[in-house]
Image (cartoon, rainbow, N blue to C red; front, side, top):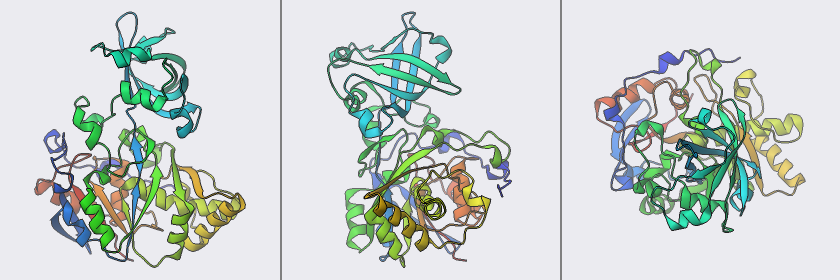
Length: 404
């Protein structure tokens, strides 16, 4: 049954002054709120290796943010901002980034009503010769509601990944209320980012330094990665009065077979670094259900976890995925998810969550509430009254799920 949850019940006062507009000088100098057994304590993020159980497996999202925001100009002088969301032609990330002359993307286009049928040229106010040499142009192929398909073409034979590096800017969250700056190129990216595709950072990982990662590993914690490309939907507010009226966007993810085998052995606490890792890990159970019932993995719909109670164990679900990978001679699972995690959700995989502080009335706050069994308000009241910094560049928390 689809949960009937009033989004107004997940509101709290967040003034602009509480939002961290810039990162701290040191990644691991942020404050860390620990929530364990219903109790709250304070730490500094560099102390997190001492808080994670030494027999745990810690899961990171190694997606990489691309400079997906491009600024074009019409012959009339009107400025058009194009925000690349996901590949269309070719439809695979690794293929589209290797294109050397043209490609098509699903995009959010600012001032799209001012864009008729003309081809746009990249706005180059500094007359940068490297930018000018590319002659990057954009053509509007079609409009589909809030998004459009845009074809990009350029000269010089460089791969599109390099074109974005030269011409694009990092799409920092709109709630920062500022333009992208040089510092964002480095700091709106995790140190372990590997695979290009996200238009928003998995921000829980922004606090980790090489030293912190080495100390966690030195404690015997098994460190694993998944890759979920974060879409622009992470910025979208819930506009409906009830969560049942909100639509989640599809996000693609990849999980390696070796990690699935490790997870199958079980017996250890699973620590998810960020809500994107949570959504990937929890989607695995339902991918396994699809494999059991339909013989192959399928994308996970938004409400699948709530439609009925599934009696399969996590081990059975993962076994079904592994059997499918064996039958297809695959070493990784490639799938997509629209899963929404809200109060009433039954967690199948994740025991501990490392995460920042999220916006009021957001799907991420609903996930936090589900994870801490409804006790989100005491956590956020504490963070507000003790001057924690909020949102993407803000402070962090480590939350231990209550055992039932």
